[in-house]
Amino acid sequence: MKICGIIAEYNPFHKGHQYQIEETRRRLGDDTAIVCVLSGDYVQRGEAAVMDKNRRAEAAVRCGADLVLSLPLRWSLSSAPGFADGAVHILRQAGCDFISFGAEDDDLQELQALAGLIAEKSVEEAIIARMDEGMPYAIARERELYSRIREKAELIRKPNNILAVEYLRAIRQQEASMIPIAVKRTGAEHDGEEVHEGIASASYIRTLIRDEQLDRAQALLPAPVFEMLVGAEEEGRLLWDLSRLDCALTAVLRRMDASDFAKVPGAAEGLEHRLAEAVRKGRSFEEMCALAKTKRYAHSRIRRMLYSAFLGIEKQDRPLPPFTRVLAFNDRGRAVLSRLESSEDFTFLTKPAAAKALPEGARAAFELEAKAADAYDLALPAYGEHPLGREWTKGPVYIRK
Image (cartoon, rainbow, N blue to C red; front, top):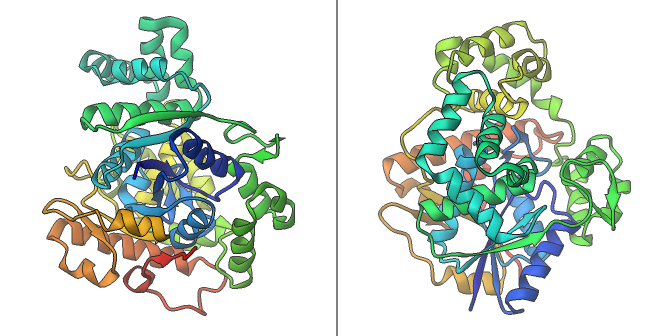
């Protein structure tokens, strides 16, 4: 059985995601097992997901995936390199033979050349030197690459290409044997607000959901996903309004000072002082982010740092996840699970109770995840109708075909 990994957020799962799974199977064979590593309740752009990770994982399996594993909190809320490092590591542990990803440009040779260049120490040092001059990371990287390879550096401007290159870099650095498959992105642009060939971006679909226009999103979603979104809304488990987290965010963040923000991943060059000042003056989370943002510090970086501070994520030496949770699977996914084994350094958690036996560092990471899930659930419309502690009680969903 071939096993192909996909790294995703599925916030929410839409027809473009379904196309990627179908195209991957078309290339590798219908019997290919698709293993997804999924962001948790908080996602890489620095915000809470519209549905919790358990429901998003179930939606993925109902729409073509076979096994969905979690990307722990610290890596879900990381920059593109950290996000890629953590997810690729989990796919390696899951025994994936291939990795499939979407890209605006699907020329693997050029993407791999970029990944190899970024991984070179001299390039890394040159990017850091440009950042020391006041450039944001993305611009520093683009200019350094342009100085070396000219027009080909344009590839790194496109959002899906950026992640594709980071996945390829992570594969190279971790000496993983996974064979990459680039699926050309179809439909609307990433974060675009138009619908193209029946496919819209997840960003546009989230806008419809948050504008309470779920009916307009129906045509853009696979039927099982739309049914799950409607069900979540009826149960008060759809986080359509991010401002529901504002009270908790501002209350926690205003208890912090610059020394607290200095402990958060991404803090450098005195940014902690800017965050502390923005938190003191801002009347909402969005206003705090706007006050802290500059040309040098991207909005997504500010958001990730403030969410990390809120959730208690601190800098640490561990570069890769020590565990993953099994969130959802079907019969073929169960066959993959039967081949997986935990090791001294990495654990596949199939039962929440098993978290109590995790090594100290991994146990601390799981407990952080549990507290973050409780914070997410408290922001839901039906927060008073469901018990907290989901991370300790919710087992994986088994979808029988």
